[in-house]
Image 1 (cartoon, rainbow, N blue to C red):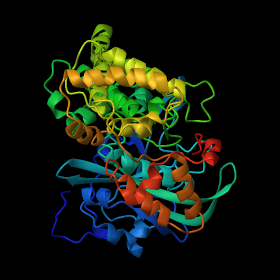
Image 2 (cartoon, helix red, strand yellow):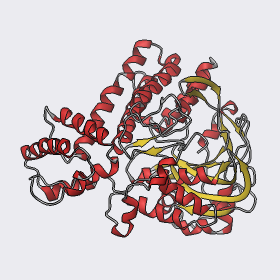
Image 3 (tube, rainbow, N blue to C red):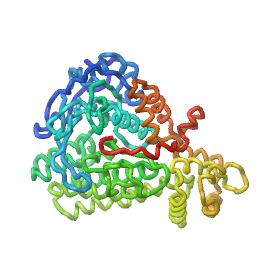
Length: 496
């Protein structure tokens, strides 16, 4: 149902369809959200609201709070929980599904359909041992990071709002419940296809693939083998997404196949983290004892997941060779995108033979000196091309090995002179791609602790800061600083 910009939208008149509900009943279970006692609004995103034709101020109204909590279901909604399966930490986990999420439907927008999903809305048939609820802590983290990633230009699901309740929920300790309203064109995952493959239900597998192609990849319908073409496009998007994660220092933490979007979006924010003191082996997820999802491993795991998807699509594609050919795009797509992003991050407008060595030396120096990832690239834009000019002091001060930095900076400056780089133009270009502000774990923790006392001001403040990650924002300079000492004790896990 199309958005009419002249119509005032209420929860009762949300223009919802549900294309996923048109699939056969085996793909989902229809059910209503579990009511949430005495819900209150924690935060709402104006940019996300605008995508579906809503005014963010309206979301603070009592009827919208009821809808965002699942207490009021829009008239046009067809609530459902989807089934899927997946590999978790590289091991086949069997049937999973929306264990605490309910899809309300989708809204037609000029940019395409956007689905609305309530995460934390109660038990479903796929909850397994869970309670179907989300807690305020994890909901705030997902809300802030979804919107922060979108502002960084990285493909991501979005977060419309978070509502809370005083209802108790037990995790490691007793916490309070919350529901985050997530938005994405689709929440279909790699594991959605694995589910039918491992059940040997190829008709259902074909039904899902045809649905995804028709709705999201219509240009592939006329390909000689549409299913191979879809695998190739999903593989390409996934590879490029991994490059974008690496370039900004983002670590997902749980790259299971059930958390991988068939559209190449960042999906399911749990124990994520942004790199601080640079260490390629850093593991942001305390649950990940083996380091499968470390920063350095993300590109390889992304490829592994694409191979898992290729295995699931083999019955439709028909030939192993065709699957392998589609998957071959991964390495080139990742390398090409990451190389492009690194050139942008270093302000280089041309490509030359020695660039790879320059990049490798830079990362080795960063690792040896445990340099803050975000600050390094931001301050690199202030480094003058010619030595002796002011502007590089803050960057140099990040390094214990000053001589090592000076040697690398000499090579970098020579490279800049080779393409006649101008400091002012390069600085502007680099600051447009190297964020000053990212969602550090300690920042989210401060906002969470205040929110647990019903003070939501820090959530709102972070949302505003992270909406403009590349701007100087001198009034918010403290959010660009190194994390405080106490932050080194923070841990996030799969319950986060």
